[in-house]
Length: 123
Image (cartoon, rainbow, N blue to C red; front, side, top):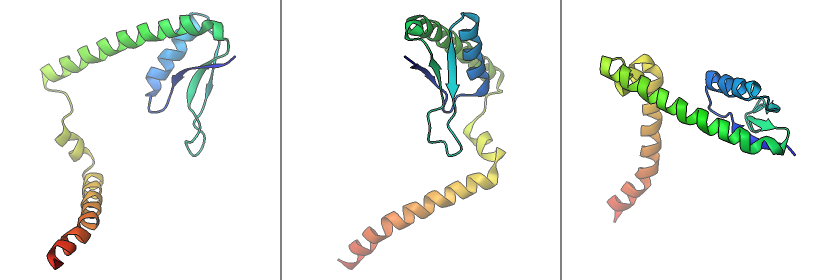
């Protein structure tokens, strides 16, 4: 019976490729489903044979632990060199988008609070 192993929503392509390669290297039969044109389906890697679940889960857990350690080490090294990305750098990379998001948040805040401000002012 097919078993869900790994959801691919918001997973970078290089990580998904690494998981596919890991399963292929160990001879685990799997298939992949896509999110579809509207993104409402499950994008995931599924195992065809339920007997492979324990082995695949163990491989994936080991890979994820090693991957997390490697990413943390790389981030610490970038931070030590001063090359890590800060919030200001992210905002400045797309200034128009940042301003639009800020304006949207301000608009939502305004329309959410104005009825209460008017009510308190009338009392």
